Length: 325
Image (cartoon, rainbow, N blue to C red; front, side, top):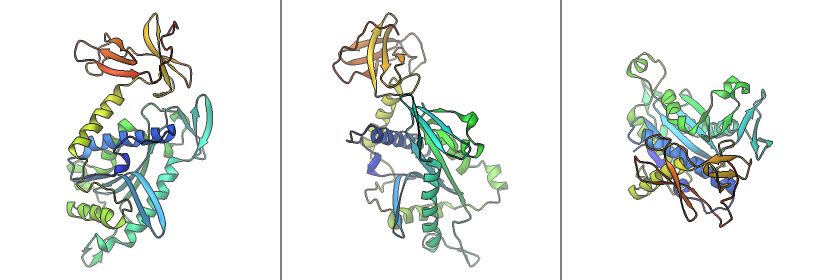
């Protein structure tokens, strides 16, 4: 099976650091999209949370994709505000209305790529054979890296340099990006002149990555999550996709429930924006779904399906204010 996931992103973190929690959730979201798209593929192998050590240097890759034509590194970034990148490739993001610089995820991915490429080039005879008496290698294969940001992130793409802009995608588009790089139709594959790995070679590289290079031994070598854990991830991602987020900044945690003349809504504690809980039904898209409250839980009910949870008030505060949304 082509999906290999370490235990690091299988379960919710116990950390109280909101940035760590958000980052781990972003990795789980991307892993979910990749699993849905490529769990049955024989030519796309996905390694989630791949940690390795080589020549005394250690690297952690959020998502490594081994495909027919080479390697793709995906750097996940949990960014729910706005993002800008200047002409020099310097990144900045907004948080609670304030802008600050952040390290370039593209540069981070490129550093990880360099170490992985050296490790594979130096050890190619261990997983690749010879062709016409010449040892095959991976240096001339495709080596790509992308940054995957949260779906709710606002990208100021008009001002982002073109070469960087094309390497920033949102979580929901990650499967399409992988297909664009690692898959070709039969005609394009026939006309393509670039070298490619056979299915046997893909399997051999996968074994080398896990058995000799991977420094994180808590790998599920069955190639997929156990059924119970897989179902848990599906349910968690489905629930997360239905939860309310601030319509302005995308915040999902720092919210408080309120009630006004237009019904239930949430107030964002980060940007002070009000967002209605009455959203289109996640199943049929109907805008006639109604919100009901059960203690600290808020449920959306539509005629087409059972109710589903959209918001939980974390603390027992006086949340139903007479504020107009």
